[in-house]
Image (cartoon, one colour):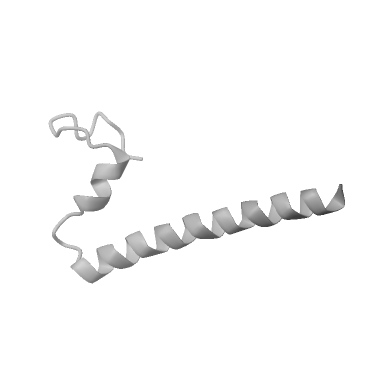
Length: 60
């Protein structure tokens, strides 16, 4: 999180926009790997939630 006062001259981007708008210094593969790891983290969270729900249901 950067201080909003630093880049006050630049238009503020939403979180979902910054992923597609990476600076050109990064290579395309690097950006893809970052996005891929984000997606993997989301899916693992989903699986963990499902597992929790399953055990909760099982113990009833």
